[in-house]
Image 1 (cartoon, protein in one colour):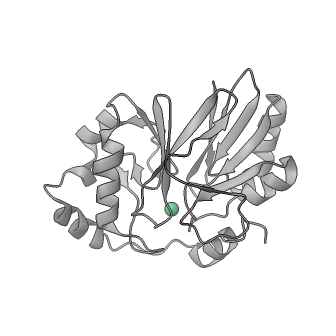
Image 2 (image 1 turned 180 degrees about the horizontal axis):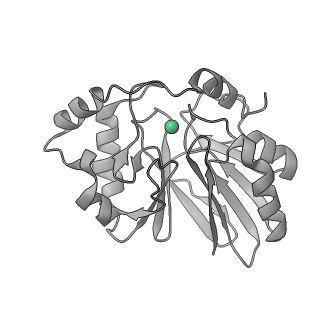
Length: 227
Ligand SMILES: [Fe+2]
């Protein structure tokens, strides 16, 4: 498997390029508009064909590069079926794998950060978007976020994956790049709650400022970044 993690140091976003080395088919998860030239260069230099550009959810802190990647590579753009986006080619649903070469991503509906958040399991790893982050969890205070739903997504879905599964989030603000299910169970302070109610209270009291780009990014992402 070809696996690359890209970092956008403006929005602190991780994007992932994954490819089957034999079939040369690739997907990218959570591409950032300003970095599309970088991804296209990597795709060309690795002699890959981009088949899917996938967003884990409608982002509020950066504009997606999915539309621009489609224009450049003719890939299929994809996002969860709950997202209010008309420009997308494929609406993702739980239980319907995304196949490329001999690899596949299995979508899991993990609402809570937003109502359109999906995570994707592949082999020994899971791409958790802004649902489960490293030593943190995604905020739940806008875009139809819901801390109770997020608790269910994390505790009833993600944390039931094997402990050795690697976690690759959509963001990190502290220099972490990868974690594992077991590591987050043991050390993620947001998960140190005794009940769903306690988790909801915790998330409702974070008192975070809105993302700077929110008013620009959300409408732009509803147009696949083609603004
Ligand atoms: Fe987000």
